[in-house]
Length: 439
Image (tube, rainbow, N blue to C red; front, side, top):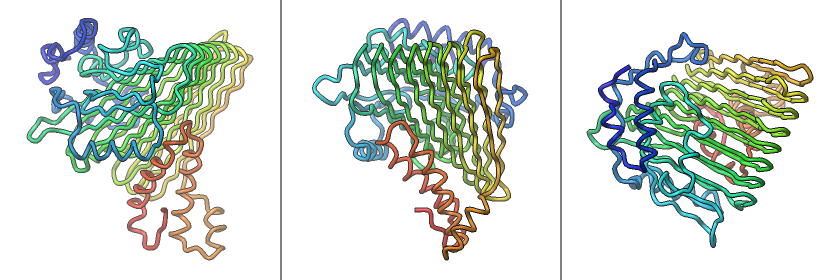
């Protein structure tokens, strides 16, 4: 496949150490030999991916690392809202700005691909190969945000990464390729918050993030991502995580913005006794499409994985959830659970839910469950019987639906921000319903 906007010359013009330049060149070749995703593939079923015209987009030429005034204002507001942080960075269209480590030393490495020791092993260390979109990220990300926590280090407060995605005046329809890598040594602890945002009414754009999480034996990583990009953006994200012996990997992805918002999260517990906790939430308004694909990969004995994915669709928006629990041979005494709940708030909205099991071992516990439907009438009746109007009752129920999963999130400091963003969009969803209250 050859596109005039994504060329070997464009990838070669990007800065970075030699190993990164070589990696980009190899990715360009791999992309040329691959085919674009198609709705005919099971992993893209129910999606609008056939509408993607890559030739209409172009990778942005790296410019100023710092976002403009709107981006900096947003970044500063998030920093203030989250409270104490161990580090933060603002990333503008994939190009990181200054990396700030807070505290006397920090005890961890936080920087770009030319600054963090062992960066070459971190980029591509968890996400191996991948589809054409992952290859595009490999070829065109300007620089990576890398967080490397050595053995035994406990990072006391969250590390914040804010991606501000916009476009220059008169520029081509942009394609942005954020890249993040997190690696924890043995018996280390850290929490990372990653946010994708941009100005409202910014026009069409394509954002293709790749995030890799590597968690060594006995370590605990908590990770939360929030996507609140502009309403015309397509965001096609890949999250790959791996946990070693007795490691704990906790992830929470929240998708609220974009015209088409997709997260594919592959979480592997490949060390004995490792545990994964996977949360995902989404809220659709207008004609949005939210698409969540998960893989709970249990490779080693006595591993466990619990997933809860829930969201709501209003207007004529729709959602797709497809998840797979895969238990490998030899992974005895594993325990895996997968749950997906969907609220359909309007007649024009739609939700698909496709849970799957692939079990190749006998001595295991596995379960999956999904629900799709309107607000529970018993809940509505209970609230209305207390003198609450129907519209207000519905708003309160949906707010509680989202508060329940947010309260389970692995990084409490980010919960007020998640609640604020969800409620702002619930106001939109219920805006044409007189008297509705969700705040």
